[in-house]
Image (cartoon, rainbow, N blue to C red; front, side, top):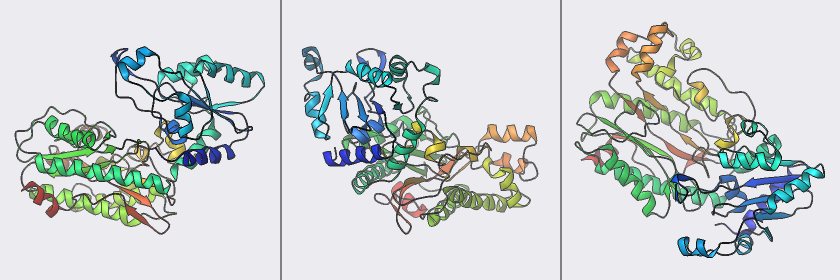
Amino acid sequence: MFSKESYRQRRVELRSGIEGGLLLFLGNGESPMNFADNCFPFRQDSSFLYYFGLNQPDLAAVIDVEEGAEVIFGDELTIDHIVWMGDLPTIAERAARVGVTGTRPRAALAEVVKAALAAGRPVRFLPPYRTDNALLLHELLDVPLREAADRASLDFIRAVVDQRSVKSDEEIVELDGAVDISVEMHITAMRMARPGMLESEVAAEVERVAVAAGGRISFPVIATIHGETLHNHFHGNKLSEGDLFLLDAGAETAMGYAGDLSSTFPVSPTFSERQRTIYELQLAAYDTAVAMLAPGVPNRDVHFAAARVIADGMKDLGLMKGDIDEAMAAGAHAMFFPCGVGHMMGLDVHDMEDLGEVHVGYGGEAKSTQFGLKSLRLGRELEPGFVITIEPGIYFVPQLMDLWRSQNHCADFLDFDALDQWRDFGGVRNEEDYLITSDGARRLGKAKPLIIDEIEALRA
């Protein structure tokens, strides 16, 4: 937990950007797996963590914009809670740690909200992503369940996005730590993966590293020999000589800050010539993207610069043809790069994604609907204090090849017969995390093995 002054100052800054009314923060509750007392690991709502810092379930908070009053709502533990789950400080004691003096029982939240509504005061809330909070908004504000996200306050969303997008020095320390642990997760995988193992064995050890460091994984581990599936969470395949192994995994610190890295390495001791060719092309796209990072540069341009390297390389391999500028305008490069170059990162591995990509990644501007480009989560100009991922990839997706061939889509720019020779290749990506500085960017955390010699040395 940061100092109480840090949280107090965050709330003061937030209040200064809102014109009147109440700001309603709904913390998360427990989420049962299969019955009420057997729950998934608890994770607090990130905006609640950012402004109130308390990582316990069943809390809510209100900020009165005009009066400056702040109240945390929660119920004290009963003896049954204590016997089964252990003791905790009182609500007032916990609130004092983050500079809040007002506390009330959870049931009083409805009273406070209804009094504000009766006085004609706006009650602003952020988009709910959990059904229990959508139900609570329905009870408190008579918001239809299916409309809860659409009824969220735009000025509240924008104020939170503006504030959380720029990371403070103390947040950067946490993020550096998260990335350091994440690097250890990847080094562990590179050292241990061997023919005959299951993907699940590698995934389990990777997660162990995160937990042993005092945190947990920041998202479900992707550990697969089928890297062509971008978010492949199946871990049942056996590793064999000649396979490429793709790991996408990160650690989350005890305070909730995320790391997010990807690595690709051979299951054999060394890369094959074919694997080396694609790996080095992907690395060239990665290096091109990193070299562009600076304040004022639209991340959309970073994306296209990396995509251009991939497209030029695919033409050299005989997989693309024709004018590359025209091919990219048509989206033909998305055959190999069907996603975005990266995203914001912070308290969420995809930072503030619950608040909407159009606000977080595009400053309210409309996103493209073109295949591939529509998956670019961050297109806006970069600013000092932004923390982002850089992760261009090259993927050979047989189903996408078949679909585009059947539709004759981008046939002027793709050689489908040549593509057929790559159907079983899989996918390659590398990902690291960067802080945008006043004059450029710096990588967060320690260096991850990235070049072929470094990886093969760990595989020996």
